[in-house]
Image 1 (spheres, rainbow, N blue to C red):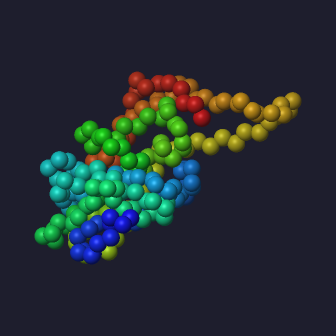
Image 2 (cartoon, one colour; image 1 turned 180 degrees about the horizontal axis):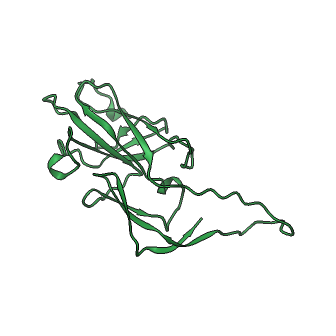
Image 3 (cartoon, rainbow, N blue to C red; image 1 turned 45 degrees about the vertical axis):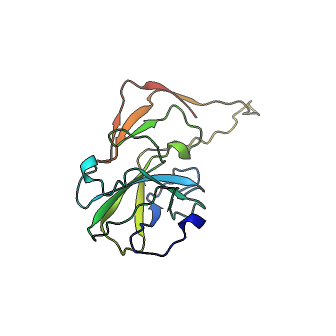
Length: 196
């Protein structure tokens, strides 16, 4: 983007990424889609994710891969810069981006699935002990949920599957994902249906 053209001062953080796992669970496999957005936190090296440990206000900054190549640039007004004093920092990131988080909790709701990628929760917390001068931070994301794939074919006496619906019932549909610990806590009261 034209507004991102600047002299490299060694402070601006640039991200590239990969998605771990042998079984692709995103709609586009184990790659990114155009305009996928992640949320990024920069915190004091070796410290837990908390208000006290966020560096320079870099909390839940939105970064976007415009072409889906896994290179992420900041959304307007979301740039993260390394501390000018050279101190080390860690990064935590997640996908898909949610603008409003409370207490560093990502709300999972599987009852509503407009697209497979919109509910494919990814998490990265392995970028540690970095400082200005790093050419590019690599975020290695891992899947936090499983994807169920159904291959349905017409059986004897059935020629047309038009209008077929598949609904999972009796499943728990909501959970809280704690970004600080990378843990998922299922809401046991959220039993409901998931329409595939």
